Length: 294
Ligand code: NAP
Image 1 (cartoon, rainbow, N blue to C red):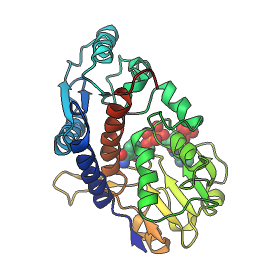
Image 2 (image 1 turned 90 degrees about the horizontal axis):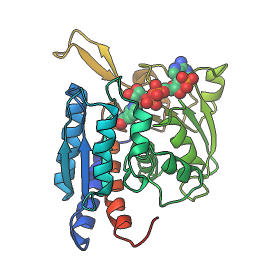
Image 3 (image 1 turned 45 degrees about the horizontal axis):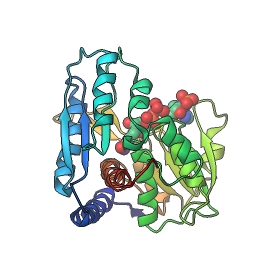
């Protein structure tokens, strides 16, 4: 069994981006990081994005409106960033407070600045295999992990557990692309799938993104499988100072001995998400510098 080291692969991507940004003509790429309210997890995610931006040479603009901001006020803020020629990418940190409509907010971001890849236009471009679109960072990171670990998808059976717009569906669409690095046969499973283990046991590559701690057990996989564990779950653990430990959607102790390769949690998919956000921002800078719409 080989561990896929997401920290190392993400660091490689960040180093490549730093070298690329140093060669870009004109101003540096710029990302606007919008965080509504003071949610502790969001504070730490945005801080990590700001730090990684600085490391690469990407300018970040920090905009932290109060939790009381209205939908119209947030729309106006986004409209201002959409119109600002000095901003290449806009990220609105999820989750938003309950009184705000997240999908409507994501759609308000101009598609050519949607570095999170959640806009309808970018999801459509992914389905149409149009490389000018932005792909959501976690599924794009999964594909980079697989490619850079030497895992070939072509002709293989990829089984995706989960059908969210943020992970499961775009991961399935990516694995399906008519590209040498993709060309997989894809099955997508979800909460209404009957006899789930019958599908997961067929997987050459299993992508687990359901948000259920240690759900995938040894009885659900075949020997030699490559497992990508996207789940990030907090489970109570009295032995930890924090009172919890992080675990994935896969029961690592029993599944990992059966795998040819597997990602750990933490240190697998997680670091890739930020690296791919940076990659999308540099791509936005390049594309937004071109004349006309893309
Ligand atoms: P989500 O929006 O809650 O979607 C979960 C999906 O799993 C749904 O499609 C759901 O089916 C399916 N599901 C739930 N229970 C199931 C079961 N018992 N059997 C089969 N399918 C089941 O979650 P998400 O945003 O995709 O996130 C999934 C996990 O990835 C979470 O742990 C999240 O924290 C993690 N995540 C990690 C990163 C990262 O950077 N590492 C980024 C994003 C998410 P239905 O559609 O039928 O409800």
